[in-house]
Structures are given as C-alpha cells and as structure tokens.
Image 1: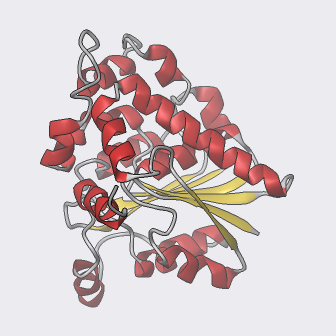
Image 2 (image 1 turned 30 degrees about the vertical axis):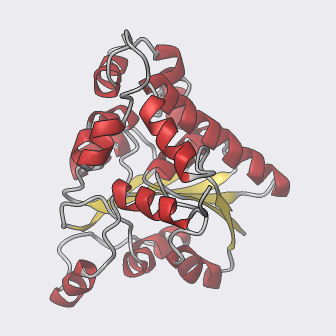
Length: 271
C-alpha cells in the first residue's frame, strides 16, 4: 500500500513526521512529494512575490502532475494522497485526475482554491505584503482575480480551469475524501470546507480544532479521524473535544506560512 504526502507552503518533504508515525504502522509505504519552487528560500520568496493568480493555479497544476507521475512508479495499484494546506490542493487536483487515488485526505485545506486565495491576507501580514506585489501591472491582484475566476471572468481563466476542483466531471472521478481542519481557520474555515464537500459523492468533513488558526493537523487527530477513514470504518464526529483533548491541541505547534518560510530560509547555507 502506498501513501503520497505533499507538504504545505514553505514546508519541505520532511515536514510532519506524524505522517510516518501514524500511517506506516498501517502498512503504508510513505512517499513524500516536494512542492515546486521550494528548492531554496530565495526561489520560494521570489515565486510568491512575482506570481499572478494564474501562476498560483499553474503551481498547483504542476504539483499535481508531479504527484501522479511519481505514483506511476507503482502503477496500476491504488494509493492514498494526503496533502497539507497548499499540498492539499495539489493532492485534490491529483485525485480528480487519477482514479487510482482511493482515498484523499486534505489537512487544513478547504478544497476551494479561489476562496483560499481570497483569504491570503488573513493568513499573515507578511504573505499579504509580498504575494503578487511584483507580478507586473495590468492583471489585478490575486484576490481580485480569484474572485473573478468564480464567475468565469478572470484574466487567468484558462489557468484556473486546469485545476478547477468544482468541475462536475472531475468531482465525479473523486473517490473518497476526508477534510480535517480548524473550525476558525482563516484560510480554510468550516463553511468553505462544507461548501466544497457538498459537491463530492463521498466526502467527510471534520473540524478537529477550534483555535482559529491555520496550522498542521497533529498526530492525535490523524489517529482519531484519518485512520478509520483509510480503514473504511465510521469516522468519529468532530468538535467538541474532551477537556483533555482540548488541552493537548493547544500545545500543537502553530506554523503559519510566515513561520514555515522563515525556517526554510534559516536552514539554507549562506550563498
């Protein structure tokens, strides 16, 4: 059994060791997918600062192609795709393209790309300050173009349609979907998760935290919700947590996009 994990913005293929801790004991071979443009901190910051909405769509498109191509190494077996934040969109697009993905798990990702792009300014001030600021004049901002894409009027409609997760034929190819998140996540709030899940044939949404932040899904939540999902067993209800679980969730690492990017920058050798 194979499981492909795709990290989030500013992360690395080594992110979230909980993935191996939870899923390897189930018999899964874990393959970690590197998101494009994460070769260095400079490359990543340049990509974010110079990207239009269309470039961000292409970023997801390329990542999904990489994931499916990697999975081709063990074709024709079914496999599982798990993605965190930006990696969630990559995993979802891949799952709508490759029906060998038997189970897709989105972590802190609503499945609604336009909605997430319109919320980037709520993620952290740093991303809001640099995202698309050097993309060139005449194309509008990322938030504006994402809003227009919903109505089919974006200057980058072709790029968006290549990854439009709401497209009916793509949704029909999606097999089983689980979305795990924080009820008040500013980028992937409960409402956006439920909105996307309603269009899928077999989708489950569980808001497993209520911290109001965009952060990783921890080991305890993965064990409680993702494991039964993969075993095709009933998935427990989400909130409210018990007092003990709530206390445990409060000590989970809070990794915003800015923190991830800064850690990546510090990890690169000088020059």
